[in-house]
Image: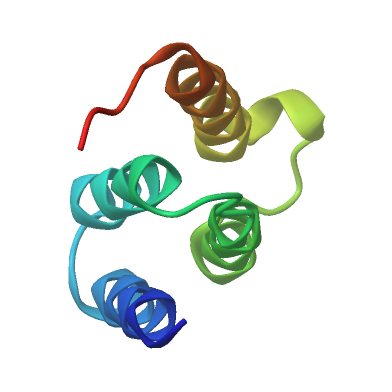
Length: 85
C-alpha cells in the first residue's frame, strides 16, 4: 500500500514537472506493477482537466482517448502475461 502511494505521488510530481512521455510511461508501468491500478484513469482525467484543449468536441481530446485505449490494452496484455517468481 505504501509503495502504491509513493508511486502515485511520483506520478503527481511528474505531471507537474515533466512532459507527457514521462508520466504516461509511469502510468503504463503502474498498470503492470500493481493489481487493478485504476488510478491511471483518474490521472489521465487530471491531465485532461489541467492541460487539455477547450472548446472542442469529444474527438478533439486525442491524449485522453489514446491514453485510455493504451491503458485498456495494457491491462489486457497484463492478464495474458505469466509472471514467474
